Length: 125
Image 1 (cartoon, rainbow, N blue to C red):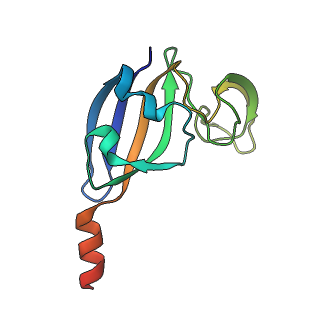
Image 2: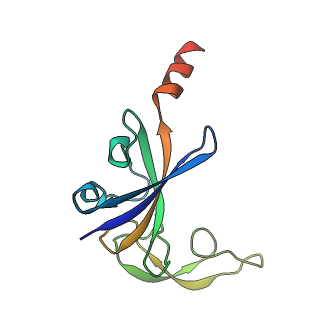
């Protein structure tokens, strides 16, 4: 069964929270893609919206939003998740995982994009 370690970051105050999801609590994330906005109640943050920003599998292979599917692929990268170039114009073939969350994913990264405090603050200005 699926077991995820979800790291939820809040950019407004610079904090992060780790939530472990197992079995039935983890199933709402399976099949979701990087960049999707989901309800925060999945990760114990009711009344908030969170966005999936990435993740990695058991071997540490990172997810990339521009690789389709949920499998590992060897792609040529020039930067971004999975490759940090040391010279200008450098490209390299690296193994990355697709943008879909499967049961092989271990860690999922998310960020808070909408919260009641932000909404109230925006209305008052």
